[in-house]
Image (cartoon, rainbow, N blue to C red; front, side, top):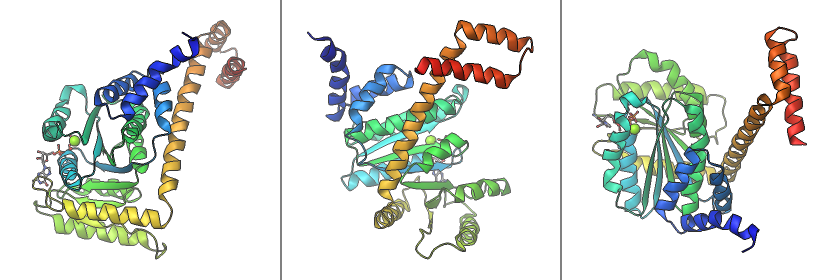
Length: 328
Ligand SMILES: Nc1nc2c(ncn2[C@@H]2O[C@H](COP(=O)(O)OP(=O)(O)OP(=O)(O)O)[C@@H](O)[C@H]2O)c(=O)[nH]1
Ligand SMILES: [Mg+2]
């Protein structure tokens, strides 16, 4: 038994099983990612060469706007086209009001026995930093498993979540009628990231008005842009009945065709990979900083700082010096 292979093979074995579509191994790796276990990165690196093929759809919108219900319908329609679907549903609600996760499970339960569907809910307990770390890894795992379409569901509130949606190939922004004026600013911010607007709960009053509002905001935003630019369509759905879902998927396909035509699909992938590397680099730097703060030299610096013997910027210099030493 040589040390080298025995150290590597558990990672490789796990990777092989995941590449073979083993759902239990994938779920185990996701737990390792959640725990930020170092074993996870070794397996993820094994998987990396097998990623880059899935098409990623991001869905964002206010809490309760019907994202999960819509995703469930999308899964149903995609499966009817013989496409396999991996889904990551991010739920940033606190553990005290954790009904939504259960809701997701119940809603999407009917796909649980379908081998062509993998659904993973992520409870973040408000920890969006953690969320932005694990979601790209989850997407890579599902991508390596060979799912054709990946769907990320996230409440459009924080920057970390917006980033995730921005990293999708097609970003869908959900709105619903009757939320009042306070969402105007919110909508303006979402204009930037939306490739498709969906007015869900179109069975409610106010859908035509919201549609007109969004259209005019989009028209203003489109002024001065290229003829050739993608113009986000505004669609209406009733997720509870599935109305409008086929049309939504048609528009996702149209957007995909546009990306292909403009050679942007590769660029999206390159940006995702870069984002992923940056995130891992940030993790590594944080660990270096923590190690620096855990040193004897820093014990002295901490005392000196607390006595106001020098300023915080000099403290930074010392910490950087410790990081440099650790790197050399
Ligand atoms: N009337 C109507 N109700 C809907 C529609 N779509 C979803 N709902 C209902 O809206 C509620 C919230 O739906 P979810 O799919 O859980 O919404 P969500 O955006 O995933 O919610 P969070 O993940 O908690 O932010 C549920 O009771 C759905 O049945 C729709 O098109 N019309
Ligand atoms: Mg949901």
